[in-house]
Length: 494
Image 1 (cartoon, rainbow, N blue to C red):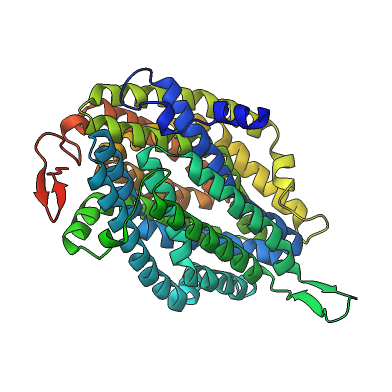
Image 2 (cartoon, rainbow, N blue to C red; image 1 turned 180 degrees about the vertical axis):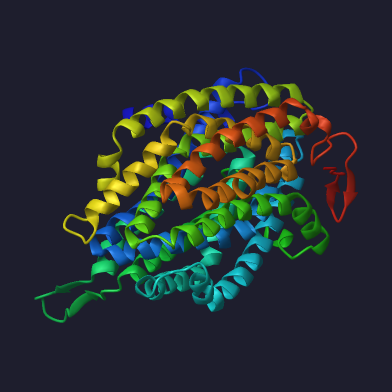
């Protein structure tokens, strides 16, 4: 009972605080903290794969460095639907329109599954051609392709679970997704070594045969990830259908409504552009990275995964700001939403700057965790990965500023603004700078492009937010909404 009481104090659900009134820091903290842990579990998927494949061989580690950006690309192409659903649920919840929030959630689940099936099918048939185009070497192409084809086949489960997290977050419940994610990641971590390396257990008891896991290498890592995500998505669906925690979905509301699809696309397309821009930046950088030896490719993969851990507070707080902004805009309180964004930006700059200093001074032990002892080129991978971290570490705080303000843009329905900031930062600054400097600086030019784009991206986000144009409108207008297909509709301008 004591442990349960302590957990209830540490993690508080939406029934324990009001996002639209009272203090800002406390509800933002309780909203964001479970997201930090959920994202940590999310990252554990990638880190587990990276760790075990690093013990397997260097080619497998390089292969997943190519595969991960494409996974991100496929998910990013469809992520706009989940962002739109989260924004609609948040704003309807803030406006006190529970039935409309349920309809938005139900339609979001339907169209997210349909979109992921389409994208997964395309990805399965064209993944090898794509990896060839971005420059995967012969040693890397086949394992990377086998990994990606499994992911493509399971994209509906992977994306569906992400939608469950987004919808629950829009309602204000970040605890339930955290608990489901925990079970899923534990399952993935347990399955990874069995399926990557193979495992055989011979039972001596009568009538009991041999229990065997085949040695599947990198494909085994993909199977473990997809299976654990599929199970988590099934649990998420059961929770939403029951409706006892967070947002509820209803089978009657899940029949595809094309008029609502247009609304989801209008809000979500810019978010897809933003996510796709990030993914394309990673994939375009692979064109450059692929011109270097495999140990640089492996170092790039390790570095981006380390960043995914360090940036967990930024992503979590940004999601919390997105929800707080959505609910406060829906409740007609834009000034409160602005205060939340400023508080988040200040806090993230401080926290991530401290983390950056730690990474700057101790990069070698961090990179070494992901490199198997005695593996070919392990010393070179550690040296290159450490250089990457040192170049970028001191700019971590600026990423926090950019994330906080773009999260507020999304919560207000200004998804196009968030997309524009992302495209400018990654497509106009990072990639061209890397391309222009590798001739004189070598791989250091790639690392430098990350650092410079982080700083400039933060400046752009802050300056744009200061203009105040995000206040002009919300997706949901609580006073002028009109009935349309059984759901109150409202104008959205952007």
